[in-house]
Image 1 (cartoon, one colour):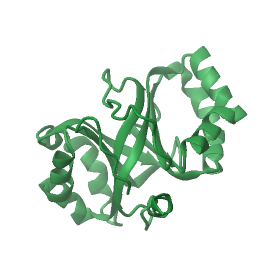
Image 2: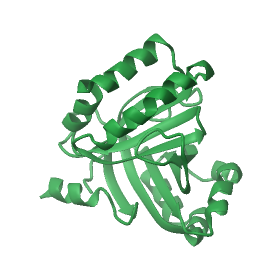
Image 3: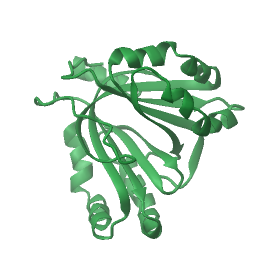
Length: 246
């Protein structure tokens, strides 16, 4: 993929694991057992082990065969050491049918995740043309759950049909109340067209603020700078990146 020199060495990665049939219980168990091992990884500044939902956005239905690991690293070297040579990743490879990782440079971030801001924007100059990734994450107030989940199917359908969407997945730390969506778009224009021009999405944003659906929320944009591996049988960024570089 494109190589963009960062202003600092920090790097964000998202890794998605797809588990083989017969290994689903092992994958689920890692959500509660791998925290101690991750706490001891050199250069790892922030991490979240994440479950996933069915479909491309927020979902009330879990997908027990796919999980995610989002990390912030003090350097690309620390990330590569973990991803390529750590015992933990070797253990995951023994159980997974496919693993996909994308390296990301934050360009914009606001809000908090468990009381901290894990993504420090790396780029201050004009961003180049090409793919842009977005993470939206929220802790949902209990009293707002019925309203939030009433709108979810419509929002997820609109996301699936959005022009310029390369890939997306619903992720979460806790079913129903701690939810996130990670998406990659062909361009900033495509992402903004979905986020700011669709009536449904604008209505959800309005109600989120007016009715205080979230007790905590975070929004971040990234430039994807490298990806490798498989997600649903392919690297979803390979085609668009080749087009960008041509």
